Image (cartoon, rainbow, N blue to C red; front, side, top):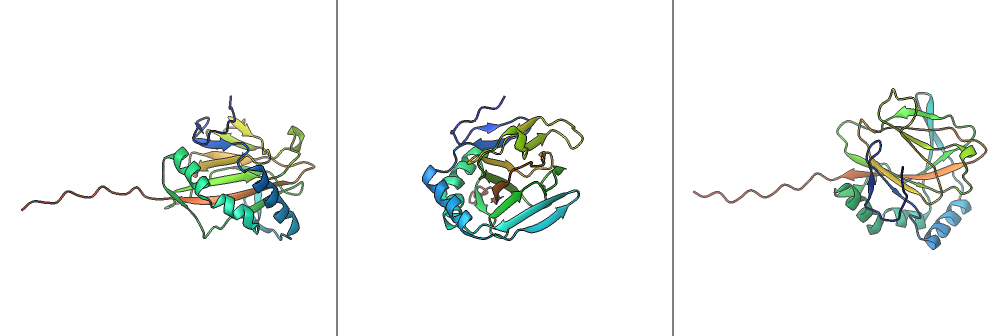
Length: 201
């Protein structure tokens, strides 16, 4: 059973390591971010992946950009995963949407060759209930039918995980609700090598 606490460095290990932090943003920062998102217009690009699809737009909220790309967020992730990291600026920070027209996203992993990254999501939509769907399912394998754990997309909940080939997950379909989240991708820095001792002649 998962217990959601505000301690930012506790990784849950079932079924694979991931970080969950509730009430991630201070209330005033969350309110300002939501106000900026609602005041702007977003046109979502669509990318199909198998039977699933991603609906995304570049995040326009300055307040939320500052919160995501902050020393605190970097510190939380670095402490939890025990690595140094930097924001992947080529991927930018994305606002993602799911609604009743969006199909479920099937079981997959986010691994890419020659990349070592951490994906983080911040859920923004209010009013979630079990009938809304949109849970983030985690699996031990691609063939597993019933998820080992399902995460509810509650507003201001933060999720992060390394994009390993064994980190299988899916997102269930949404019903009567709009699921907004912010995706950030972080590059894990290679560990610094210890300097070689001076050779003696």
